[in-house]
Length: 352
Image (cartoon, rainbow, N blue to C red; front, side, top):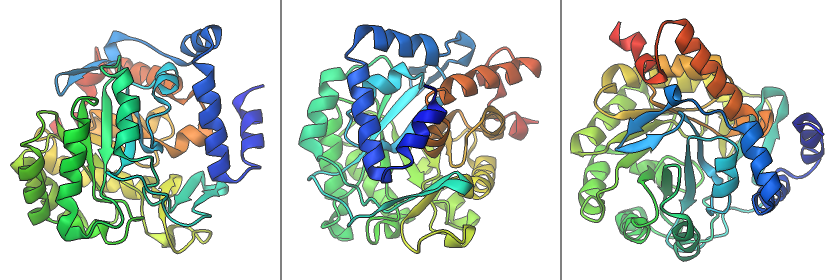
């Protein structure tokens, strides 16, 4: 049975239930030795020409899973076996929270997109820290995506981030600061230069790990560039462009709540990344996310300035072969253009 057949079955189920079933299957698979070996043999593509040293860490390839897929750090081992070059767990909050009312996850199948209004549902710091600690240090870079609890007012938000950084410092290689999800009320109001400065001043005292800021795709280009410049000026080492979109005009099938991801936001994400990269390339590690489902798209973002690529929705639509296919093909594209490694292709469109 290939993934097309499996997807037909999963797509008959409620999306959130389908995700839970897939999670369970992945967790069970790596506990069976021959199945785990099968996954590695069939879904991993390894070539040193894909590797990069970033943040002092070895990234075997530039393709990672975005935050939100493995909220509770339960799928680290199976995702590693499926060929990702780095993994992001979370978004997690200090206290457990159930998230927004259901239904809160929707497929837009014709557009190969997803709309989610999950609301940072997660098991909370204590449980997730326990899981991550058992695996850390890990063979791949592990990034913790952190956010504030829904009940925490914005003027107390920094305390939540301090709690999370202190708690997770010993079980991750970097932190993603999530202030750009549309599904926690008023969270995006924290996307301000003053908050970023105050936040960095507080949490940089608690960790030496790189801090990465994730921004929303719905910011104006000028506002996004200004915020990202401010973040790098105070000490943020990386930028993720971008989170999900609340531009519901992108589809007549969209709900009027939650965030859109997948093909619907590809052009919006790429355009914002292109403009931010023109100003920020060389000042921070740039990570592109949004609507990437094939090697041509990934390679285009790399040449625009992305050291790293993150996928989420395309993993659901294209299946477990996606990492292997993209990595194999982007390497071929780089070699065909005369580069000896992926790292040589990073930012060539800006450097020309």
